Length: 615
Image (cartoon, rainbow, N blue to C red; front, side, top):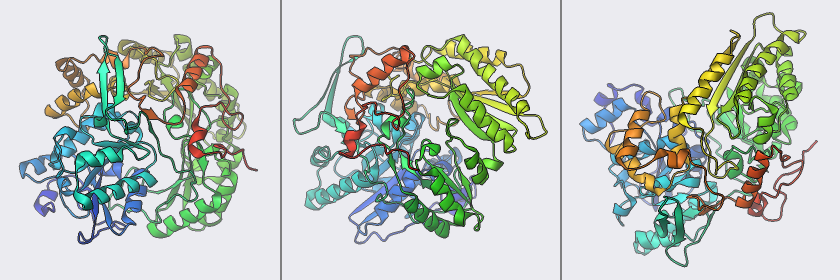
C-alpha cells in the first residue's frame, strides 16, 4: 500500500519513500513469472549510490517476465509511523509489501547492517527465520561482500550468492520460475539451486563444534550438495551488461554522479585487504567500451560529474588513453572526472593536469603504515619517496591540503611504527615548504587512522585483532605524538571496529546474538547515533557468547574456518605463504611484475588473469 500523504508530511525527506524517480522501471504484474524486491539494509541515500544495485536492477528488468523493485531501510521517524499505523515496509515501484514478492534479495556491504536486515524483514512482515518460511513465503537471498562469510546470517537467509551476480542471479531466477510452474517446493528448489555455481544454501550443511568452540566438522548433508561453493565471476567485462541509464533521485545521495566501472580485481595483494582478494582475477574493460558507456549515461542522466571506479584506478593499464578519450567530450559538456583511488607510486603530473576534480579537491593517499618495515609486513609495496614525490606533484599543482590514510593495530605493530605516522605527516609538511611554486598559504595534513580488522580471505585471517584496551592506548599514544597544528588526527571508533571484527570472522552461532539484538530494538548500527558498544556487549553476555573468541583469538593454521566452505579461487596455501612472508617482513611483487600463484587465474580459464601494462 502507498504511504499516506499525512504520514509523509511527518517524516524527514519523504522522497526516500515515494519512488517515481526518473529512470525507474514499473511493470504490470500480469504476465510476470517472478518478482524480486532488491533491498538495501541502509537508508535511501546510501543504497541508491550502490553500483551493484544499479547493475542488477537493470539486468533483472530487461527480462520481460521478471520484475525487480527497490526497498531501503526507513529512518526511525518513518519506522515509528509504519509501526503505529500497521503499514508494512513496501517497495518503491509498486508499493507492495515485502511478503508479497517471490524473492527478497539483500546486498550486504557491511557487517553492522545485519540487525537492519532483520528489522526490514520484520517491517515487511516476512518471517525472520529461514526454518520458519515455507513454500508460500518469499525466499530471502543475500549477496555482496559480506556473503563471503555469511554464517552469522545463516539462521535468517535461505541462500547466498557468492561472487558477481550478473549471470548467476538470472540463472537462479529462471530455475525458480521452472519450479514455480511445476509446483513449487522450497526444499526441492533449494536442493537444486545448490547445484548452480555460486549458490550457497546454509541449511544444506551440518556444522559441529569441538569442546573449545572451534569447528570440528562442516559438511554437506547430501552427496549432491557441493563441499565447496565456488564464486562466480564475469570473465569478459567488455561483454558484461551495464546500465545505459541510472535512476536519478529527487534528493541528494552519497554518489550523485555517473559511476563508470573501469575494471574488477586488483594487482597489488595487500595482506589486510579482503576486496583485493575476493574480486580477483583482474579483468579490464577496454577504453572504447568505457567511453561508449560513459556517453550513454551522460546523455540519460544529466549528471555533471563522473567517477572512474575500481579498487586502484591508477593501476588501469589504459588510464592515459581512457582519460584522453573522455576529455575529448566531457570538457565541452562541463562534466568533471573524479579518480577516487589513486596510489602514491602511480600518481603522475599528467593525471594531475588532466583530472579536474583532482585539481580542485583534497588529494588522499594511503601509506597504511608509518614505517617501511610495517609496510613490508602488509605488502603495501610503497616507499616514502613515492609518497613525497606524489605530494610534491600535488603541491606544484596548487594543492596545500593532503589526507593520509593509515591503519592502527596491524600485526607486529609497535609504538615505533606509530611514531612513524607522526613523522611521515611532519615530513610531508616539510616537503610542502621545500617545493618551489607551492601555494603561498599554510599547508594542512590530515591523518585518518582506522583500526585493523582481520577479514576472511586475507593473509591476516588467522591473526587476532589488537585487544580493545590496547587499541585505545595506541590511538591516544599517536595523538600525543602530533604537536604540529598543521597536522590533524582523526581516528575510527575502536568499539565499532571490535564489533565488526566479531561478525567478520563469526560463525552461525552468532545468529542468536543478532536475534537478541533485534528483540531489543537494535538497528542502523552503522550509524554513530544508533550504535551502542555497551548494548552489544550485553547481548553477547546474555547469549553466552565471548566476543574475544571471534575478534581477539589467533586461529590455528589447520583450524576449520567458518568460510572454508567458500572457494574464491585464491587458495588457502597462498594465504598461508603470504602470512609467513609477512612475519619475515618480505614482500610479494604485484601481478604485473610476476605471478605469485594465488590460484585466481583458474576462474577465468586459460587466459592471462592480469594483462601486461599497455603503452
